[in-house]
Image (cartoon, rainbow over all chains, first blue to last red):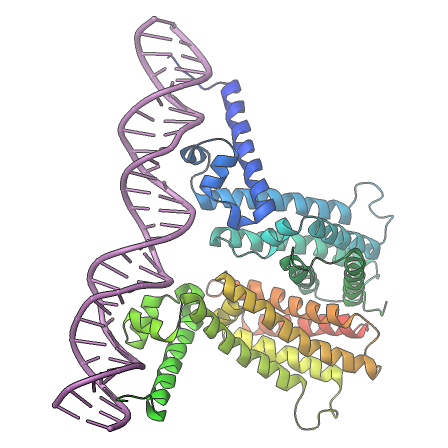
Length: 212
Length: 212
DNA sequence: TATAGGTGTGAACCGTGATTCACTTTATTA
DNA sequence: TAATAAAGTGAATCACGGTTCACACCTATA
C-alpha cells in the first residue's frame, strides 16, 4: 500500500487549516464578516479558492468556525475574570462582576470592528444561531456569579436567569452604537471612561439594588 | 395639455402604495424580512413584479418603509404609555416606566415573528441603520422619563443616556431568545408572566436603586 | 377622438459571490 | 521508480433574487 497519511501530513493539514482560520479572523477583524469572502480569504492566505473547500465544506461552516474560535476566546477571558483560579472566594461577587464587565467592554473598545462583527453585524443565519449559544455562555457566567452573590447575601433575591440575560443585553446595546459609528465619531478617552463608569454603575444598581 | 394627474389619480396611487405596504407588512409579520421578496409581495398584492418598482425605488427602500411604519407604531404606543395625555403628572415615573415596559413586551410576545424581525433579524444594511434610529427613539422615551424621575427625586442620580440605552438592551435581549425559538418551544402563559415580572423588577432595581 | 403622460406587465437580464471539477502537483510507500 | 492518494489550482458554472424595459393599457384634457 503505497500511501498512507502520517502524523506529519496530518499536522501539516491542521496547520494549514489554522492558517486559513487565522487569515479569516484577520479579515473579520478588519472588515467584519462582510469582508470575509472566499476569494479574499484565498488571496490573503495565498491559496486558490478551491483549496478553501478542502478545509471547509461551505462558507457558512467557515464563518461559523471563525465566529466560534473568536468568541470562545472572549468568553474564556470573561469567565476567568469572573472566576479567577486563585483566591476564588477572597474577592467579593460585586467586585468580580465589575471585573467581568470591565474585561468585556475594554476588549470590545480595543477591537471595535471585531466586537461589532461578533455581537451585532448582520450575518449568515448559521452564525446567528451560534450567537445565541454564546450569548447564553456569557449569561451563564453572570448567572453563576449572581447565584453566588444571592447565596452570600451580597445581592438581593432576583430571577438569576433574567438578570444574567439582561446584563448581556445591557453590554451589547450600550456598546453597539459606539462600535457602529466606528471611524466616523470615535469616542475619545474621556467619553470612553465615562461610558464605562456609567455602565458599571447601572449594572451594579440592577444586580445589587443599591444606589451607587 | 392633454393630461394632468388629478386628486383622484393621486389618491388611487397613494392607496395602491398603502396596499403594497400592507401586504409587505403581512409577509414580514408571518415570515420576517426573509419572507419579503419582490415576487412574493407582487403575488400577494396581485400585481406584477415591475409594478412594485413603480412605488418603491428598490428592495431596500421597500424594506425600510415597512420597517419604519411598523416600528413607528410600536414606538408611539410606548411613548403614549410613558407620557399619557391626561393626568401626565398624576402617575409616578416609576409606574409609567413599568407601564411602558409592559406595553412593549406584551406587544412583542403577541406578535413574536414581527417583533423578532423588527428587533433582531438579520436585515439589509439600510434597515439596520434605521434600527439604530428607532432604538434611539425608544431610548429617548426612557431618557425623558428617567430625567423626570431624577428631578422629582424618585430616582437616584445616574447617567440618563446610558440607563436609557441599557433598558432598550435589556428588553431586546431578554425577549430575543423567547422570540427566536418561536414555534419550537413557545413559552406558556405562566412562564411568560414570570419573565415579564422578573423583567420589571430588574428594570426597577436598575433605575431606582432599590431592592424590590 | 387625438394626444400625452401615467400605470401595469412579466420574461429576460444582471451582478455577486459561492461552489464545482478536471487537472496538476506533492507526499508516501514498496 | 512506480503506484497511490491526498492537496492545490482557478476558470467555469451555478443560484438566486433584484432590477430593467419594451410594450400594452388606462386616464385626463381640448
